[in-house]
Length: 275
Image: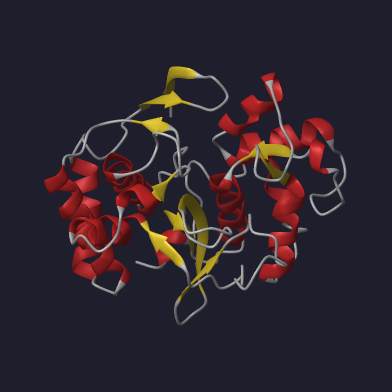
């Protein structure tokens, strides 16, 4: 199952900009440095964006992210860019560009949906990290995290909780679901948010690296339990669980997006989008 993550997905494919990835450093810290040079978070790095700039968070495809970068820069991706001139994105975009660059070199890599409890308080924020196969195990990389932040190693993150793990812990009443979500005080947290994140985790697992604000299908608690159980088992090396997930995802319209998603974005976009 590792080999399926060596090739680009429709979302990670750099398209006409593939040659740009040839010049990115081959070591992971160097690669992540380039990713952080290309993308700026739409709010978490102390900058604010509006209008067309904020709409860059909906770029969706790596090819489009790189097209936006090319519209402002002619030098290689590693040439320093001022933060304000970088492509506006979110954790998903940091992770997806990391994965795209690794896949460009035929390194097995994928994005993981879940929660980070290492951003300075007790709340677990919804987050996306990259994960690559080092020949022995999957190693998680948080490309959004400043390497000098706290006691977390961004190049081998051990404190990331997958959506399936969080949902399973919630169902066992081992965690407070209201401590997991987009922020500690808003409506995007708790039981329903955890359930929706399980569906997103499965989609990313199947190489549909959708935006965090895409909506599609439907999932009830029983289906979330079924998916989460197999995601956790697959992470533990259960190949049968991996196969079951792939088959169910392909066959069940409640799980896969088909050709359209409803995008409700922080940019203000609220529309059906062809994917």
